[in-house]
Image (tube, rainbow, N blue to C red):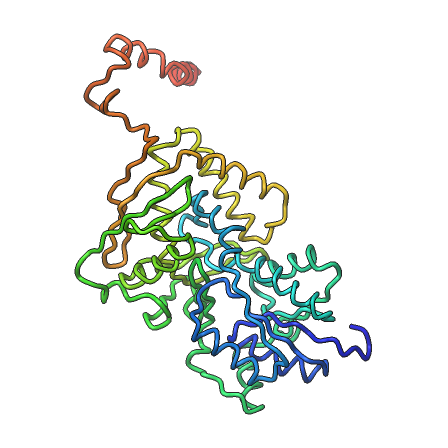
Length: 404
C-alpha cells in the first residue's frame, strides 16, 4: 500500500470470529480507518443485522454499511442452481460458495466509492472461500489490493479469540467452536467433527433446523407453483422467489428437513468435509426435478444432468467468470420454457417427499398410451418388430466376442 496513505480499508464483515478479529488488527497494523461492509446474501433478520453493525462499531470500525444482495444472488446464480438441479456429489446444494462472488462485487463497489486502498476479508488459507473471493476481486477490482489477515498470519480460532479478549472484546468461546456461514440457500457448519470422516455434528451445532426426531409428528404438505422453472407461488399464494426460499427454509427447518454432511474435493486439491442445513434447497430441487420429468424429453434431461453437475463444479470452484458459465445458463434458461406446473411435497421428520406434479405441457398422456397396458400409437406387430431390431447392436457384439 502507498506509504502514508490515510485512505480506508474496506472489510467484508460477517460479524463472526474471524472478521471480528480483522477490525482491530487492521486498525492497529495499518493505522487507517476500517469500514466494514456486510453484504446480506440471506441468513440474517433485521435484529441480527443490527447486532452485526453494533459489533463492528464496538470493535472500532469507522463506519458500517449493510447491503441487501439477496435478489442479486438469486438472479446471478441461485435460479440456475434450481434450473440445473445442482447438488454437488448428489448431496450438497452449494449453500454459501456462490455468495462470495456477489459479496466481493458489492464490497468492491463500496471500496471504489470510498477510494479505499485495499479490500480485506477473513478467509483462512485452507478453504475454498479465499479462492472465490480473491479471483472475483482480481477480475473485477482493477488492481485493488487484497488483505487477508487470518490467512497471512495462519491463525487458529483460539488465537483470534485470545487476541480479541486481550483487547477487552468479549468472545463467546462455545459459539466460536463452530464456524457457521448462513446464506439464502442454506448454512454450512464446520467444527471438530467435520475434521474427521466419521464425525457426527451434535444437534445443537445446527443453528436453524429442528432435529428430525424432535420434528412434528404430523406431516405437512406444501404445493409449489413453478413458471418456466422459477418458483412463483407457495400453497396458492403468489410470492417472489426470495420470499418462497425464506419461507421454505423456515417451514422445512421446523420439520428437520435439509440437514446433511458432505465430503468433496476442494479447489486446493485436498478433501474437505462440511455439515450443512438447506431446507429450501432440499424442497425446491426435488420438486423442480420431478416437474421436469413430466415436460422434458429424455435427452434434454440427460444433457441437463451432466451440464448441471459441470455448472455446479465450476461455480463451487470459483470459475463463475468463465464465459462457459453464461453458455450453460443460456442452455438452462432455454430448457425451462415448458417447466410450468404444480408440485406437492410432503415434509415429515427430516424428509421432503414429492407426492406428485401436474403440468400443462405434460408428456404423460394417458389419452395416447398407458405404460404396460394399451396405446393408440402402435399395435402388437409394431412392438414385435421394434424389439427384434432394438437389440441388434448388442446381439452382434455378443456373437463377435463369443466367437473368439
